Image: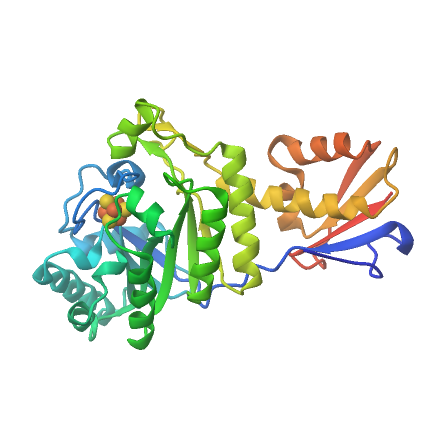
Length: 366
Ligand code: SF4
């Protein structure tokens, strides 16, 4: 985060600073995603943190969905703009399924491409399923993106999470997917058993070194029915607090943004199941987790600006792009309250300016 003097949001240049958040690079393409959830399809075992029936809210789904009906319904309810439409198989270990089933699903998807309903396919799978034989299964299919459940690049953490693969498997998988000409996303987790903040950060650096096309960051939750729930109940696992998860995620976001890697999601998609304490026993779940992270990034940036100004006892004006304003305020104006108290301000005024770049914040004495 840099602070530049000179360009001022107010006419008084010496009492104003601009602060830049690292711009989050736009993903190569923003498709309309039609999700198809295949809870635990192809999973060799249950990873300790996982219960896809809760995460996807699709307890009753089988692994052979009627794809044409599903895609038709989705496109009827959410007609895409001229965007590219991508069918996405999530919630399981796609390439861990039997080969005839993988080929059946991809053949169905190919029909949808020929009809012009979708443009391509993506799926999530484990790194240890990326081998030469399985890459041949998908070679002539519409798959163009693979999301790897990397989770961590710390072998001790992977072992404690019951993943059954190593960091080296993830590095090899990324390499093989690239050689096959596929786009690669990496799903990473924070707050895993045995993982401290340093391990999460070192993993993020190692993931960034693999140069994925995008990443997702998920805080570990204690889901009912997961192996971690038993460990939590006997006191052997303590999840991150929401505050710690937001702080760690903000550090990771900055790291990936500086390495020009888009972070396309932080926190699980909000759902009724995840808001229900019968399903989520503990952990840093929040329906607007990504908003909390961006609010924390804005608060830190504004604090950097305020350190450079004689702001005590003064009213401060913060100028930002209109799309950034709710993050500047924080949920329930928490940022404004915290900054006013911390810097003993008389008050904070907020201005939206569509000419301000999305990653810039102006801080000025009013
Ligand atoms: S994390 Fe992935 S591989 Fe592990 S149980 Fe869940 S869906 Fe299966």
